[in-house]
Image (tube, rainbow, N blue to C red; front, side, top):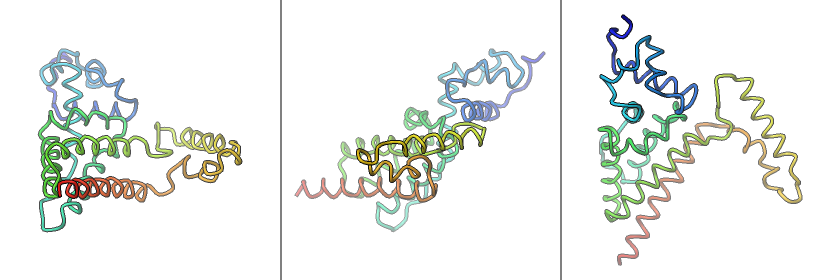
Length: 224
């Protein structure tokens, strides 16, 4: 019988991630993944207690793809940049699932490893435990926002539909009054679509790291 098929947990997670990529997180259910593997939903409960368990597994998959560089002798903020870049690289291919990492940071081994390293680096920079924890949450929100809010990023599998959407957004912005919104009109192309993805993400990381470094300096100055 179909329900007796031997299921591989990692294959099930891969299927769930593919559904999220194509249709969004709302489409990821135990029933949907079971259908795609031609089994009954009960067959998946050997691997996941419920939908929440499946989503935690998805978060673990995303976070496990993040490269955590080995500590070295460079300044802490340079090592932080590499850590955050590796984290963002893991999120970028799966923007629809990126929100899952908010819970995954403290419920998966990979998330805990990333969190521990980030806190350790901020401690090296002189940040207190409290400020480091707060900053870690702010960093996470900023990285997820970078992954899901890239201007003009693909919203579906149809390239022509995506091009039409970008064109429509550009047209709407250009139709604004240049007297009232001169800067928006001038930036219509850049606001409608990202012209250089790598530069977009690199600058985003730079802004985050600069903010962390400035916060550490401000805390050190206040302490003296």
